[in-house]
Structures are given as structure tokens and as C-alpha cells.
Amino acid sequence: MLDISKRIELINSLLEQDTEQSLTYAALESRLTLEYLCYERFRLYFSYLSESDLKNWQPKHIIKQISGEVDDNVAREFSISISDERIDGRLPETKEEFESIKYTPLGNQPELNLNKLHKLWNSVSNVALHIPVPSISSDSINIYGDKDKIREKVSEVVVFLSNIKGNLLVSGSFGKEYSFNCFVCDTKIKRPVSSLQQKTALSCINPKCQESYVIQKDKHDNFEVIRNVIKFTCLGCNEELEVPIRAFKDLRFNQILNIRCGNCSTLSEVIMRPLMKSTEAENSHNKALQRTSR
Image (tube, rainbow, N blue to C red; front, side, top):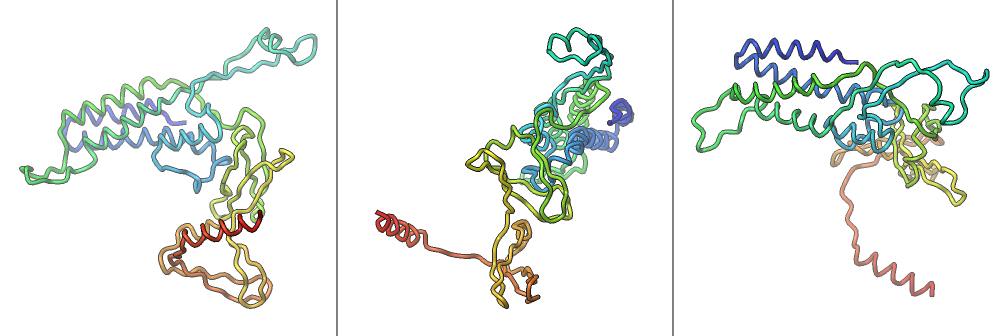
């Protein structure tokens, strides 16, 4: 867990130097500290959420995604206590019995005000970490921003950091989980059952694995796991080839993906090119099928 007091001490020492350079460095240290606060929480959820499934790289949105898909306690404040007391020689069973025994506090997780954090994260960058694009009305181009504005925003970050009080971070889902092993690399993939009530797409958490899956409920209300693939026919033996859809994610125009058949070893090339189809013709075909079915 980040030692926030040391970060505040460093930022304040840069503010005290009161030069354009030191204030700029203070803004950079402030922004990095805010990022770290989010990323250290994300790191605790590596076993649930693949980096490939992140919808946005900004720190605030990463934590919000974890909150929505894995655990909504990730940014909340709460305390944890333990107890080894028993009731008539047995463990407590009811809510009333759990509340009646004595506990020893372990610590608390501090709240992370994401909206405030995101606003500060942007503001220190705007006043210090970018050179404004010159315009026709610009007198000159300055390497550094306005000292007073930088000091004001960095001081706001210091106040924000000073109000974060806690000594632990907790990860994991507090409810029932569903898990399965990746069909290819055997890495365990898990998600809270509460987040899988609708059809869900997710990737293997192994950064070296390209597999991804769709999880949905079947007619018996059981979870069904389907590999997310694109199917091709081998040009040598007509064997069906299944290629993980993530293998195509970063392909550029005219880039070639080589596919070797596991049955006959024929090497086929898939070329990334635009495909045009007539939606009007497809709609006419669908209407014809509907008339035929009647």
C-alpha cells in the first residue's frame, strides 16, 4: 500500500522550492500519485479482470469498471475486525450472535472519491504538464505554466491526499463466484455470479493467452462457456479451424495472419481487408425466407 505521507512530503518539498521547474515537477508527482492510488487497487483484481477487457485506460474509469463488473467495494471505505470467540463452544450462526461477540479491529480501507480524484488528475495536467498550442494572439511559447495556478492545483491535491486515512486494501468478491479454467492455457478465470446475469464477454487473464469467452445461461439456468473464435476451413484438408477472435484485434489493413492446420500442416493466410455487403439484398433475402416459412 502506498505510503501517502511520504508522497505528500515530497510534493511539499517541491512546492517550497517555488521555481517554475520545481512546481512543474510537483504537478507531475501529484498526478503520478493519483494514478498509483487507482492502479494499486486494480492490481489486486488481476485474478478477475483481464487488462485486455479494460474499456478505458484512465485511472478513474478502471476503478469504476472493477466496481461494476467485480466488486463495488473497491473504492468504498470500510473496516475489518476479527474474533475467535465462540458461543457455547460453537461458532456464531445468526446475525444476532455475530453481533454479540467481541472483535479486534484489523484496520480500514480508505474511500477513494473518484470524481474528485479525476478532476484533480486532469487539472494538474492542464496547468503544468502541457504546453498550450500557440495561436495568432500568442505573444510567445512558454515551457512552463503559470506558477500561481500550478501551486493552487497541487495544493488541492495535497489536501485530497491528506484526507485519505487507512491502513489496508481488500480485494475479492464478497458473494458467490463462478469459475472455469481457460480451454487453452488452463488459467483459472472467475467472476462474481451477480455480474453474470446477462450474456458476458471476457478474456483469459493470462497476458500471454489470446483466448476470450462468452458466458451465458442455458435453458436450465446453468452457465454455459463458449470460446470466442472465428472459424475457417483449411484449404488443404477442409478441416474446420478455430482462431481466437483476439488474434485479429490489432491487425492493420493488409496485414497477414498465418494459420497452420493441426491436421495436415497446411499454412493458410488471412489478410485483413475491408468487406462490403449489400444490406438491401440481405433484407430482401430475409423477407423471402419469412414468406417461405409461412
